[in-house]
Image (cartoon, rainbow, N blue to C red; front, side):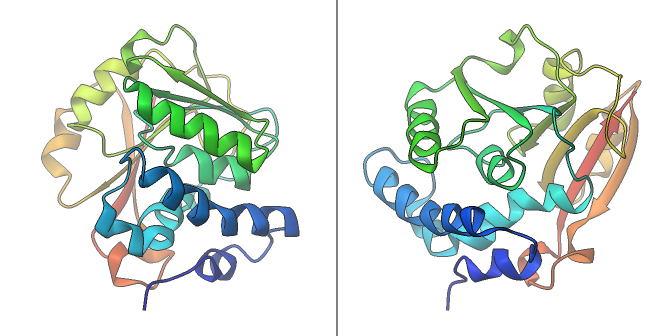
Length: 211
């Protein structure tokens, strides 16, 4: 049986009632928009909360963004990991970027319906963003060294959080070769099965790259 929003509440018991309502509403909104603009594989909607929402929130198991932190979600697609993180951290500013206009339309509609005042969604290629942030987050949009090349100048080093500012990149499988190809940045790897019991996370990692 597919996991519902309760899986989020189990791993994040500190959520308030507003946040719980927003997480419950996510599936309704994405089912509605996905039927019109395909931003998530239709067969994968059955695993929406596990594969998309909880996976996005795994970033919060390594860093709890403080108020006034700024985050760019580069190549956000339909809004992951940015929208789940924006629900979890209402005092953090999220800048969601994707080159595909119809995906940004979904992000804007979902953000508006959820009342997320901390989300800005823009249709741009990630290498066209002319601002810097505390963190760049993403979910396996491309070969990691290429991603780093496009965004490495979009984070600054003045940090307010418990880990250094940098890139937080969600990806599965064997990352050894990709990490070796990334030069001039320090690297830390987190195995997500340390935080979650589900078999989905057995090969999933979070890569933290910083100066």
